[in-house]
Length: 235
Image 1 (cartoon, one colour):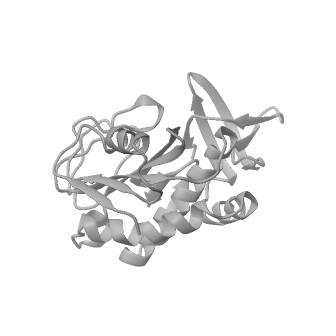
Image 2 (cartoon, rainbow, N blue to C red):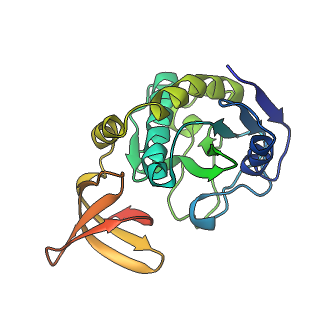
């Protein structure tokens, strides 16, 4: 496999991976840090990346994809994380569209994918050994330690991720959509609210379209496709 670049601290593994991708780093190269001081989440949000308690990594993937393929590829990354963390922890995990990995409705992992310099940059942040989280998070968070009572080593979790990431992103789009639909309780029949850049959508999830976007059947019977947004359950 390609090289893993470990750092004690970085502003963001995504930024360093972009630099290496521009220099021609091969597919499978990983940038990982024990701390990020400017971690990046989806939709411009910060990702809390305290030293020594999480896995913060970005994979450089040179796969043949267009911009239209990126949504489905992010679903594949979520599947890779779920397989890896399930094997390591024995937990039963869920995925909230598009790629928030959850345990008992609490966020365990976040994923961010971008196309830059001819490569997919796949950022993965896993909560490993935290015992508490800041107040006011948009989604209640948890860690593998809080869920299992055991500590986890970031380097070992990363090593477990490398094979599944490569395998899942290589799947055909229809296979990724099928597997994600099976793995996520949010794809069909879930009553949700969606904040799509300030535009609120309420309804019941109604499957994925051919590109991996989420379809919502609204209360008036009309169906709307969500291209991006924060999905939350409505109980």
